[in-house]
Image (tube, rainbow, N blue to C red; front, top):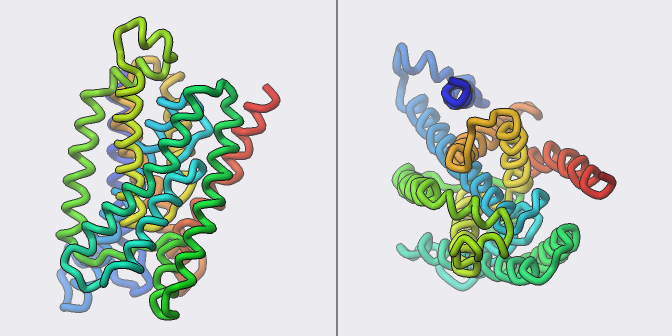
Amino acid sequence: MKRLFVFLFFFILLLVVCFVYMEVGSSGISFFGYLLNGGDETSSRIIYIRLIQLFSVFISGASLALSGFVLQRILKNPLIDPGITGVLSGSALGYVVASYLLPSFSTLFLFWKGLFSFLFGLIPGIILVLISLYSKDSIGVVILGVVLNVFISSLVVFVQSFFDPNTLSSVFTWMMGSVGINDFRVVLVYLGIEVFVLIFMIFLSRYIDVLSIGEVDAQVLGVDVRMWRSVFLVISVFLSSISVLLTGIVGFVGFIVPNTLTLLTYRCRVLNTRDAVVLNFVLGGIFLVFSHMAAKVIVGGYELPLGVVTGIIGAPIFAVFLTNLIFR
């Protein structure tokens, strides 16, 4: 009964947040009024854009939350996050390199951006997994991730220096967190991929459990630790690259959401890892949708970069967790 209540609560919260998001906008057009009375071509276009943004932001948030959840489990470190570890910066570097090397009018441009984002995001992910195999210091792994993040971010700025001013402006805006896709068919493709990955992770949730108890115990249970850790690393980087393509670099979502649900799981003993996978997907989407809604209304007439809002929310929470881990 408690498990059903938790899922029902998050489902209702998702509906409420999505409806309020569709109502919020600088144009003053009401989504509820549009549903009741219809509207002209301009109103339809505005509602259509809001719907695309809603799906894009939700998919990105869900991707980041699942990516952070997987990284925290396979690295056995609650402070790990795709942004902190450099995975997001690596994916962003791949996106920027693809934007520089390939013509934007190419029909395969989105495919190459996705491929480059995935491959470049793998690099810091592989480095962290290798270090975690030989290091028992969780704080050291986090610090290494921060160093990688700074280094890769510097490379991103270096590549950007070769862009022309117009392209540089759009890429910089996207880097701060921006919803750039305006084709609903593309967003639906990403949604289909995301749902497929979610179902795949649900079926493999028992391996996440085994990896989280430790390498020795996992081997005793007959699990190939290196193989499954590599599988989940690829999944995590793939999810991060989807987020980068949809909304640019958005930090702390993969840290806040999994840790919040971990606290909830301790209180609700009926929730298992399979439930945690589903709830990370839902809550991650809710959190980023809410953050984007806040970004549009905090400053009247101006939309703040999405990464700024999540940074303002996430940085103090991360500092509290880090302080508790150091001084406990």
